Amino acid sequence: MKKNLKKVFIVLMAFALAFSVSAKPKKTVVKKIKKSLMNTEASKDIPTSIVALSPSAAEILFAIGAGDQVAAVSEFTDYPEEAKEKPVAGGFDGKALSIETILSFKPDLVYLTQGMHDFLVQPLDEYGISWFMAKGTSIEDIKQEIIEIGKITGHAKGAVDVITDMEKKLKKASDALLQEEAAAEPVTIYYEVWNSPYMSIGSSSFLNDVIMAAGGKNIFDDITEAYPMISEESLIARNPQVILLPAGNGITVEDVQARAGWENIDAVVNGKIYIIDDNLYSRPGPRCADVVLDLSQLLK
Image (cartoon, rainbow, N blue to C red):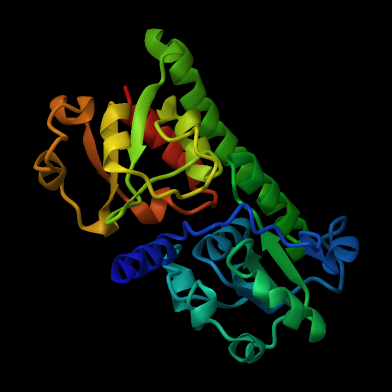
């Protein structure tokens, strides 16, 4: 059991899915830098050495035009290509990070993720280093994060451009749903985070929001936990119409079709089992709008 749980933890790290909604930091989301940077692009205090401790943080920074200000990224950062050329400050979780390594890049801003990097707040405060805490539990959260980090880094216009592009894609998906006669009946979806033990997504995961925006319904949206362990029996009983499998898990469509007791699930009967790019689907960044659009097409 311990070995399985360890595998689950590693998978969550790689997919950047391990956000803990319940672990809310007591401090404000934007620390110290908010007053001096939120309202201007010309501030002399604009950060020039940013350590981005999640793949989505790096993606946002590059998307808004702040790539040259990034001093270091996290181990699993692989998008965009330019981000892969940056030095690595460590892994995504606390066990693979050290304040000493972060300090070695002489950062004037550290880009954190709530629930994963809360432990760094105190030492960063003690060293007088500014930090930004990403929440990313919904599409609106992500959009707000992009706007805020754009102002902080001196790329407010770049951030607006990113949001504009996202909203065009989200509107396209929304318009397509309105044209579908069955739009009132969302397609039920099971997203398999892991399979030993079974783990899916709950209502507080940003992926739940993505699924709803695409015209789907997460079969475990009645569970508030972001990434709950679920029983195989409850999964079968909820009878999803579509099953989404992250490619990184190594599970094939044939593997799912061969699972005992799954043969009568609608998604299996109708061949609606899809392997998806987990690096794209699981990251709370600008490309979540692409996921909504792609998924809305997939669910037709």
